[in-house]
Length: 234
Length: 226
Image (cartoon, rainbow over all chains, first blue to last red):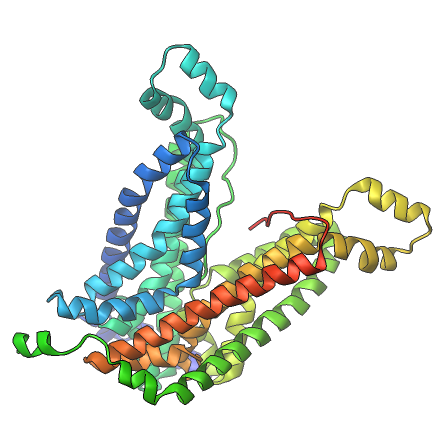
């Protein structure tokens, strides 16, 4: 019970709401890194996934990318890029963390997009070609919209994973909410550790809800319910 | 300063040579942490799957709860557990086990659901009881899907074990975490050694389980759900 009291006191303490180690700044750092990583992964993953899915080629690649993503922990990627980033003069924090998160976000987006486009009913694609649509038009007008629920769900899953993994970036000297957990562990301050855990969980849930509601709005009506998309815990 | 850095080697192979014993001990630790997590996870998942198969209405709440567990960031989960169970192996295992449940339960249930009805009909006709039908017919026929789930859970767990270095466990993750504290070739070498061995472990485990599947089910191969 005393612990709960301390926890409430931590959240009520004005010092935890201001300055560079304050909650608003840490949330902002967290969001910044998450948005850049997810956007970069989407930008890199989508074009080849759409193209390969359209031509129904490269299935082995889709499987291989997900398996590699599963086998290499984000933690290890961050640690590996740390010395490389320092060598290249990019410094601590942002770049190693960004690369690791990018590598984490990419596989679900790539593989789910590829599979969704590939699995569009061939009769629809045939009909499109029959009406004189070019490959690009089939992709934009038929396969893209048909696959859009899965693509958006994959982006949501990746984004939530990224938000949930940014805390590890505190290990390579980036800010974000992981600072509370990592620094708390270091000085054995369980209240701060728990407060960090709560904030990370809340931000992950908020991301899930926000992107879920956007998804509902932009997915073409008539394409049914939200598909299930698979992620990797981190 | 920059010149001096450029002169330094990027990796120090001699460190690997001097620390083979330590690397081997960490690898064993990694295997133990993973085996306990997947073993206990499998036992719990099997029990919950039997409940879900017997009382269908429980399947949705079971996957919902395990789905929530699966979605909690590991660092946050450890943050919640450490105040209660401390920086112990128990804390690490609770986290690791909780991440295996969703994958395993989904695959066990899907595997058993995938057993063709005529087979079950034939078994019933031959007088199989429900229990014997489960152990002698449904479980063996569901084996490819179940093992596919075990493979995914194992590979994922091997990756996650590295993170438990933060709570003083970690197997090979220890080298990754410690390597980050040196800004030198020695540090990079440790990070790389930890990562490479962990990935190699994941690949080896995956191939071994694939071999086990072939051995147990010479007649068929099916795809995993997850």
